[in-house]
Image (tube, rainbow, N blue to C red; front, side, top):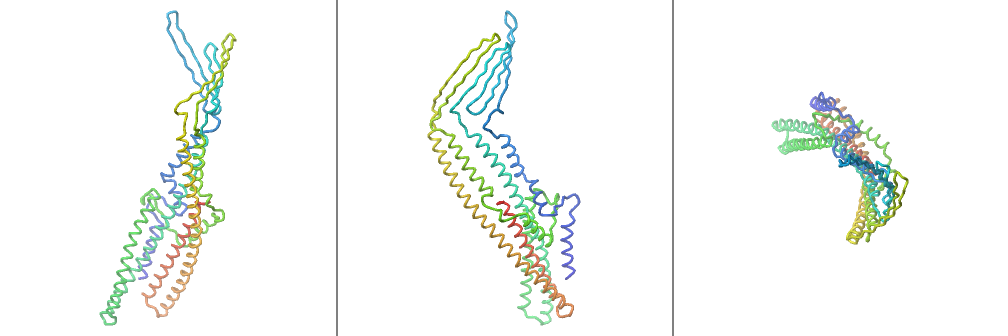
Length: 427
């Protein structure tokens, strides 16, 4: 029996420590998180959106939108050929002011300024908000992928270890049933006791089969998050001590006292949406005519100059925006309500995260205490076996209890690790 257990554990160690040739190896939770981020299309898309938002950023000054154009023409006249060249430079300063200059090939031309005093737009504000939201989206996607990958990995790791526990339990139940069957045939055991051992064996096999299905699902979830397949990537399962050290390192890098709901990206985005709605409302005028004015200085090679001024006012059905204004007001109120709801939800979730830190830490402490007590009991069982007061099957049952206690502690530490990871959303 001892040989069976040893072989099972050796198989697990070999499979997890020595991957198939050609595979990449992920040896830590940090490597798992980094790999999943690197191979996640959603995060790559978020980074592209961020680059687009940076490229589309609109400033208050419009000088960067300046343009220079040249136009040439050729005419074949009866009196001779004619060629002309004209160049135009337009320099927008802000939404309301732009400069314009034209130069002909005969050195005549004009320079002027165009004014649109009623021109207004929220494009600069909206582009800043779009850039902010794109940055927040990329950051949130990164954190969520890391948490999902580590959670899937820890679930698969625990389930993989638990398979060995369930196998051992089923093997022990089978041995006990067969021993009881012999004792029953010798009239040393009642039928009820034999049936009880058979039921225990059946339940152990059922638990093993169920756990094997759970393991298949956990494995599929893990490689889905990693964005790769088992043939390309191998994930090592850390032992209990290594997992405990990883948790200690994570705790050293995260200070719960620095976390707050206001640092949550959903919280930030919701109030940026209010800012966007306010800017949109402000940019809509109930009466919005188009008023333009301009002045130009015309010159020619002889030195003669002419000065001109123009003023224009345009009214149309598009100049009246009462309905659009009302819609924008409703949208602003809706964005305020949604922001308040987001704030309440984030504050509640933050409290739950802090509670999870406390509860998972307490569970880890209790599981560790139970594990230490089980180790003491197993050591006593080994002594009793040496003295001849314990049978081999009794010793293996004590060993099974130790395996179960160790795996319970493994699960508790994994849950605590995930709870601390969740806190990153509020840092």
